[in-house]
Length: 220
Length: 220
DNA sequence: TTTGTAATTTAGGTTAGGCTAAAATATAAA
DNA sequence: TTTATATTTTAGCCTAACCTAAATTACAAA
Ligand SMILES: [Mn+2]
Ligand SMILES: [Mn+2]
Ligand SMILES: [Mn+2]
Ligand SMILES: [Mn+2]
Image (cartoon, rainbow over all chains, first blue to last red; front, side, top):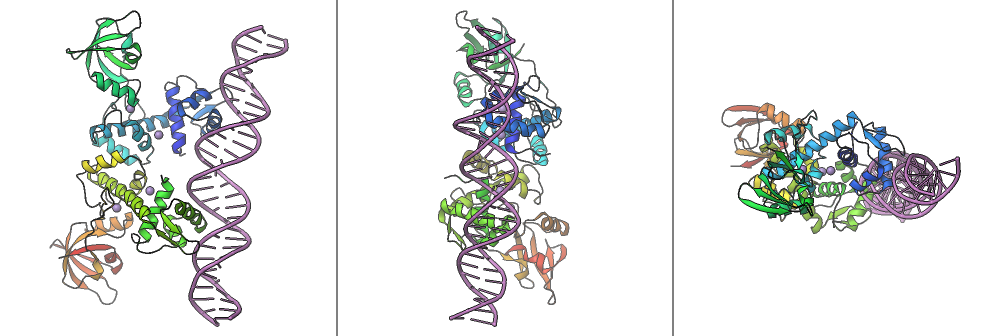
């Protein structure tokens, strides 16, 4: 059964909010994520329930089904492949891709995605460090922790960001943080949790706990 | 003012049916092209009239306005650029691109199209030989005539096809006709108008008048 | 165990884009 | 000039995806 663009967007939101199907999700949460009203969400949940991509019990929130998870991961796969395309081939900045990918992810053509994947050389991660599910929906996850949870003097590598908003990404550009950068925690301020970080053994940057919490690091 | 996907599709149909704005177009013609009912078309014409991309007088057909022409050409530009991308970069066959381009042409992002154009090296023609309007809507047309109108022994080069349906394009593949092929008219059968053609000085192919009428040639 | 309240659903309405059936109109034929 | 008919529009209905306002329900606090 086919999903509309709106249904795909809702399903993706539910997938993310449920932490990949681990938690159940409330109507209000979905409304918040989708910028719609709870009443609209109730309507949509009923429809998604009928299509059996979620399990919906009135008043008790929803759980994504296996079929739903598979569908959501296909949309996420498309979204992230397009993001790679935009950055790698069309020279978009990493803060410019999200909106466009949000549209491109709904183009219906299995051949297109298969060929795009090959054209991009089967990338495993998108420009924000998020893993790209394979055609079966399998995701190769990397162990990673928020930068603010690292210990003093620990080293690692920035592998992803939690927040993909343009504002946050442009801030990272400004201070010189990027995916792949090698980092070391030089100082952690007790008072406010802010950090001093050494980037690529040459640049010192200071950041709030809030910013660090949105940077994901592979420890080494 | 913004056009919806449906409105863009209608406007493009009107542009094509009107031969680029030269003729006025009837409700029934649009319904035929769009595979919708005349009643639905009437409704849409009223809306497009209000948005001033067409001039609509009830019962008298429509004419596309200058603004409408500009909009239609932008959509056509996007359609054809995506077709080039699919063929040149993703190895689609020329009969596989139309449906997908029909979706991709509605993605809203001027930056995307600008970058795509550059990435493809500013192509002037799509895989079916149709000219790609520039960002201002200007089209560089080539003089071309249907193959069935060529004289005996005349030579030329196939530069485009009138019919972009998969069935027709696959037939051309089968007989070995393609955009860029050098051809010469070896025989014209009086009885049914069918032709014998020499392709690239080495291959003889026979084709009906109907097929030849859908092949466009630059004379030499 | 009752009750207050936040969360959620339902009822009813809107717009976009379709449809069918009926009415209106232009125009070609008589 | 009248009339037949093909074309086009209108009226009324449908579904998808939103909305607001009202009703319902779950559950925590009393
Ligand atoms: Mn989307
Ligand atoms: Mn991303
Ligand atoms: Mn289209
Ligand atoms: Mn084409």
